[in-house]
Length: 450
Image (cartoon, rainbow, N blue to C red; front, side, top):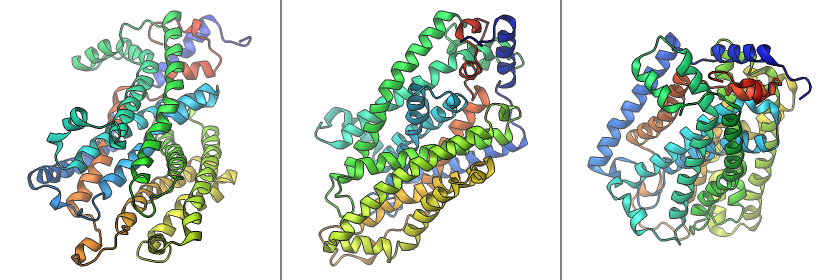
């Protein structure tokens, strides 16, 4: 690059970037946040211990609704994890420069989400002591086995995509953080893998990221397609759809983009100096991307309900009526209006693509996305093709119990705690990628650290 910053000036900027973006100790607000998350997690663990002792009878699950909010939460986590392939891989391969400050945020969200997608499945099993049966006796014909394979593969690639670009930042923490405990110094020393910031090391990182970015896209699409097949291959009204794969993937991209926007705002608002790198321009561009993804999801949503609504087969009609005008109608229309229609309309205007409005819209999309997964799972389970006859009244309805809600909330809190702990000990912005965005070549980054 002809305008590339050279010599000592380049090294000065790299040093400045590192110092400004070093992980910081939590203040009072951060400590309060961690304590609240730990309380929610402890509450969930208490009830999970009860579930291990008493079984799934402490939940609202039964013979008809055998998949409840645990599975809704699983699908939500899988959807949120797709953000890693969107920001890190797709935009990276398209050489979109403005994505640089957002890559690590998206990867941390992806890793935390996919970790707890796997754990919530174990919670839903009721007998975690039998999980090894899936590996010992699993049949390749079963979509559940496909899901395990794809989730494990996706989590491995996501961790590597997070770790490799993080090496320069870990090395800088190793060399420049002095007033820290010995265990923390040892952690940085071990995790940095002897990084010295040479041209060859940067070349290896770039090649690795490129390979992983190419690999993660089909795996990411597979994970949500396979998840959709778990539903679509089950003989139930509302799930008997060839649209489910594209429907799930498009919804996951929309949720993932909203999660990144929420993360961007937190760092932009509460971390001093970060607003120099996460700017209003990033919010504006993410707003445009969120509109595009929302329009794609709107198309598949209309397709999902229009075709069975036109045919109106009896059991499908009962299912749709429960959504459109029945028991679940308030939730259904709230999800469509506040989680999709209002965000699309609002984000068409530039004044709503500012940080504060974008944060509010992102939270609306995230909350609506969770309830959308609830609506995909629960109403369908309550409308089987074989009618419910001569069964107790409690089996004809589903209401999650307090222990069930507590365990679900604790999984969400634990995912947020993983992100919080990461931010406390590692740089959340990819400094060398930001430097490249500023025109500094990797040859000029041959300094200790980054």
